[in-house]
Amino acid sequence: MHVQKNKLDWRNDLESSRKVARKDREGYLMVLNWFESWRLRWDFKPGREAALGFWKEAVLAKEREVWQLGQWGEAVAWYLEWLEFARQEGGEGLTLGERMHRAVMQTGGRRGLALRTRKTYAQWAARFGRWVGSAQRARSHQKGAEWLTELVAKERLSFSTQKQALNALVFFFREVCGDEEVVLDVRLRKTKPRIPVVLSSGEVFALIGKLELRYQVPASLQYGSGLRLRELVGLRVKDLDIERGLLTVRGGKGDRDRVTMIPDGLKDKLCSQLAKARLVWEADRSADLPGVALPGGLGKKFPRASESWEWMWVFPAAALSCDPVSRIRRRHHLHADVYAEAVKRAAKAAGIAKRVTTHALRHSFATHLLENGTDIRTLQELLGHAQVTTTEIYAHAAQVGNSRGVRSPLDTVA
Image 1 (spheres, helix red, strand yellow):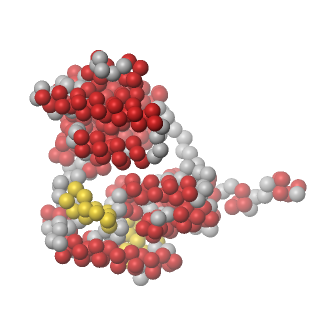
Image 2 (tube, rainbow, N blue to C red):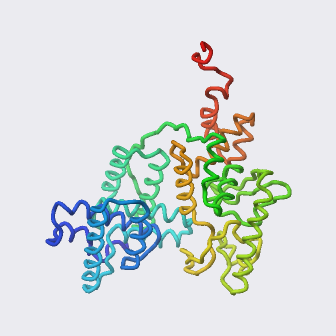
Image 3 (cartoon, one colour):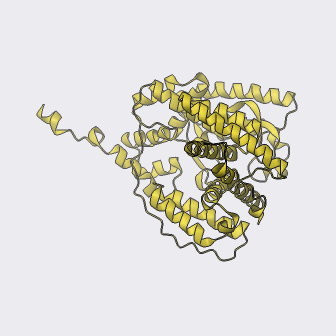
């Protein structure tokens, strides 16, 4: 198993470091754990370049207290110094969690897991590695069960997230460690479904109006077609049939395809967006750049398809980036996290006193359709739910107050 190599770990040295006052160690530990999670998420190797990126994109993403910037800066400086000594001793400076993350990513790739699944499993494995503390204990099924039990008991995780952590640990023991039989005696906690956050029509349009111009069409399409975040940013030109008003979602949640609507009021704006995307595509072809990434094994089966117009992103990124799988520098689609942060900023600017995420636009699509008389089975097909019980949660959001024709007694008395 790969995780046994390289026993250097900054956490052990931080605990015994004479350079760091005991009262500061908790703060150092917090920010360096954050830094490590950020690096793993974006697949950055430990070093000064990763530290600069973390500081710019994560730490300075919002206003911080002066003392936080001071302490966190000292923590990162301490880590970079530690990393230099670790490399002088012949180590890579990777913690147990990082080595477990790498092992799961590599094994998952060989087993053919989808990239998102590999990343998810690897992140859970890294969390387990940070918790368990040593490679020997990381091999213990009992320790795995203890960690999962602690997650269930102490963290308010949804049932699906608990199952995700369990599946990740089973994959680690079975596929990475090579254990044929994996028994983790853990009782997961069922969680009751919550009423989704739904915006009124006025709030939706206020939010879109506060968005930066380049995000207004994506947000309008997400609300108007009921798309998940990944479905939105991953749209390709071939998925749009603007004349017929149809949008095809390829490989959605559960690897299911479905067809939903294109709003009539958005057709002209989508045509303009495609014209912009066409200019980007033509510039990439003129520069002889690699084509866009293709799903599954299509890139090998049709090597030139990635350069064709129909496979181009509807919402291409402004700059090139390195493909996390092939390491090829090419055109990616609009970054999901960048768009999501823009939606949060717009909601705040619009004065919407709700916890607004991009998924609230999908929730609002479903709830507003129900309130306008769409039947639950049709809505299930539009949303791509495997079970109608999942769709029924929107009935609880819609069937309140005036949407059921019920008047408050206060209004009746008045």
